[in-house]
Length: 217
Image 1 (spheres, one colour):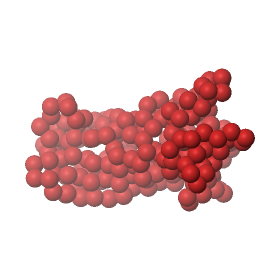
Image 2 (cartoon, helix red, strand yellow):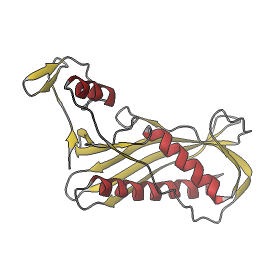
Image 3 (cartoon, rainbow, N blue to C red):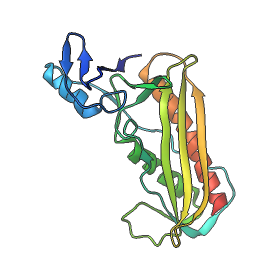
């Protein structure tokens, strides 16, 4: 498993062997633009495999809300998750990025798109939309991505955790809220295997979110 990681000094500079680069501190890892700049400065070019969430969550509930229309805003997330990078957690306080791999878009945009598809595929709602589409909305499904990562501790596992609030769009009250989490064991060292594990974990969480939402509205 290849990681992209850099050590920070107390003054916020970055230690890369015998060279030091004075970039601002942003948590425990460097963000993609900084990494790209470093690679460019070294005369090399990143060649990353690009992945998508290939599994759309499938709901199992018989509950229907044909009279309701919902809005699915883009999920919020910490900066470490709000990017194209694939997060690997190497300890409770340290994360790195999976080497030579990236998502096809910012992770929150991909999650939003998959949740919209999952709600639409149920056929049990009057309408499902994203902000700016002009739907008359009854409820917003407001989400926050808390974890979307490979946990590198033994045994390795893919972990997805998303918190959800169902917000009444007419009066701003919270109708229901919950946190959904799935952990899927991962074996092997191939990047594609890690991504497949994340796919399965998200498919479980996404399906639970859709089922719970339909029951709650």
